[in-house]
Image 1 (tube, rainbow, N blue to C red):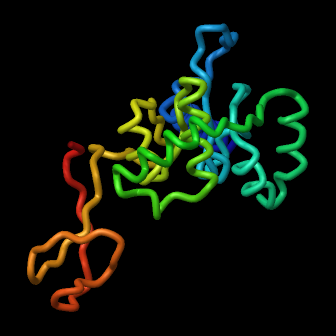
Image 2: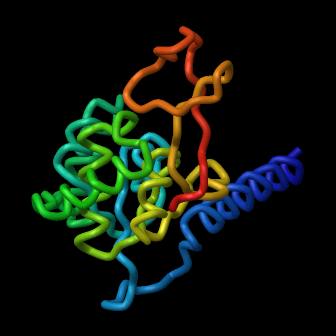
Image 3: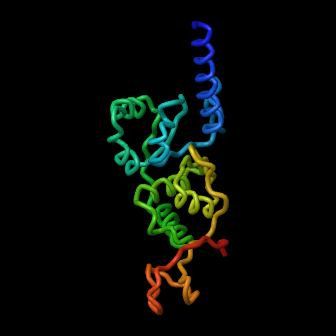
Length: 195
């Protein structure tokens, strides 16, 4: 029985180690250096537990931090991580917010993104950091901006592009509406290569 328990513990431990290595690039005993890439967290990273499972330093925005403060049982931990400097909260500038919004408009994701999403994209632009996210709209815009994306619990996006809305009946493209003004069909959405 003791051997079986030890075996099960080893399997559980290896499995957790494997997850952290595949998700976060390994958590070996390494020191952060000036050459380490800044890691930026969006809300999906917090919900996946990323900052709670490693000793790395992460950056986020005040908007995202306020969004995730309600995580049950984690509020005190979040405040402690901020106090220790393991979570750095930075407000992105208006210029980078404008660049993020402009890119989101080009991809057609602007209506899918919240102020929190735009803020982490802007922070990624400013810092040149990698963005840990499972949000497909955020990932699409980040890819167009040349931001390195690190998926957390998903495989990530396969390709980036621009969303178009089209009518399956008359085959016309439309912007800003959800129903075809010509024939009344609900519009469909598809990703096309970014041009």
